[in-house]
Length: 532
Image (cartoon, rainbow, N blue to C red; front, side, top):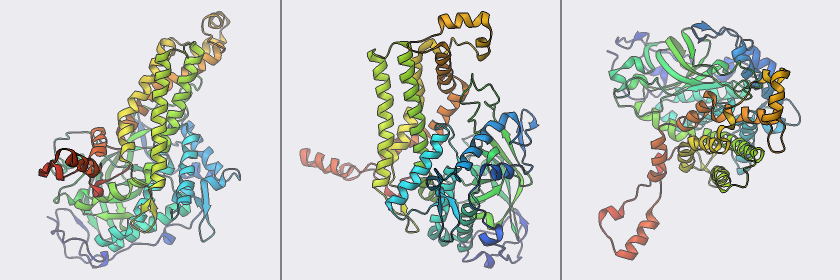
């Protein structure tokens, strides 16, 4: 058995963790090999599309239907998404958009604005506009754009004071990686959740279910297990952290690290891919399928300089929820708001072209969608208006537990409302090739036109609606919205759990004179406020 963990060492160089399996014990002295960001790679600044596409040609392993996808920049199933992201990276060099997407560091290097350390409200606004730009380019469809995980890396940077209390060297690693990722525009995805197996068991009871460290070496650790991931086939690195509470004896599961996607022993198994289909019949899924995977860690080596937290079960989930996801929350809200803007417009046009725009039930459905949209915008504005100091003295967004609850409650409702507006018009649809056959097209001209719209326009609108609210692609987007922040019930409950009811309780006491202990308490728990 590995010798008992004695708490965080002042420095890794003073720890006695030599090369060993987790069930072995040695007395070898460990010498920290932690490198500075400058030794990891010389900063190359912001990506353009060509350099990013070249970075994906690294021999990564992505299995789909039993075969390796190979070069994701050329495979028809992945090329569409890769080309779209490359297009956005090219915009970082376009003078028209450069100042929205990038900024210059004190050293004069132009880097992504996603890595900007916010010190003023204006900084917060500029960062949000960058997130909105990314979201707008994909029409709100991709939940884990590079912008999202860049903000998570900023969270690691910001947590330095707390991480340093646990282990100063590992805390330095987090800051070094931030500099490395910023200066090289590293495209990062994250894998935070273990596979859905027997959830009644603790990690210790079913260790193969959860990612864990299985060996320590002088130069790093070896990890084994699996994790869910999104956007992994298109990223350079994968960020790992547990998001659930761990018991004190579950140290081997309490690790934060980053790993290159081409690391030996790492592979990804893709879910059904929705791209590769015709763009006319599938206008969104053919272009914007970010692809979810299960990442397999078959004894993958992680150098110490890529480890940020190790064997700290009490801190791992708590710090991640409180100190990391708050930064990414604004990105998620911007994405959701962009997507609902699109759905509102689709619903409006479906109503107009069907001639039902004046029916009360249709206007109520559109009004409900607009209400949710305004609430999301208000949560963004509230987060910017209620900033507070972060762990490292930056300005962090104000916490908005209602945003997570709102999206968890309404993600499915978004689709249902558009379906009710569209009715069967998005089911009984021809295919793109039918318009090329004169024998079929004459009927399409007769029966598929809409109010003030041609048959082709009506067909394209209905196909867009079907892709987003009827097809598997749209259902996946809905489930992602509902589940990506965690248990939806916990998200909704969080609005109650973090509600400051002191004034309301005082009013009750004034009215009825209730002085029992239950009336003295309220569930507001500042330390548990999280965002994601």
